[in-house]
Length: 136
Image (cartoon, rainbow, N blue to C red; front, side):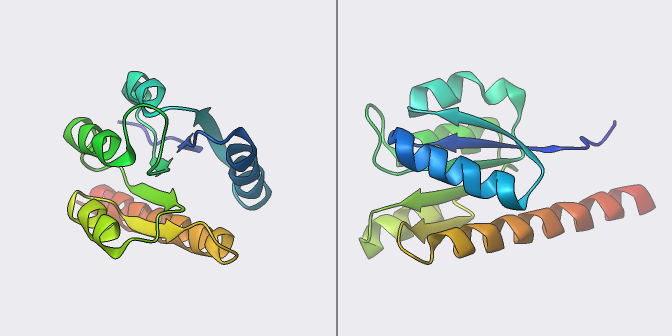
């Protein structure tokens, strides 16, 4: 088994301007292969590409983020999913975290830094797991 040299990220966001904003932020800070999706349905069709991280909005046209998250966790249980949403409802956040979200980030002025911090934590965790795999 070979390790990917470049991590891949799916951005699932129905607002094209916000999707471009997140894409640009990530490309400025990280060396990722980024794929963007305007709907959960389109993202789910490409899960066979096994992204390393998925950034998911909660409110999408069509199926919502919880439904998308549920399918992702069934098909790719080890893939971290970061919810990046305007939903400030604590019950929604709790429900999504219980469903397997790695992080729940509200779209506000602190969102870019919180997103970068979450991605760094994921990278560090994947690196530790990879080192354990090699040492075994």
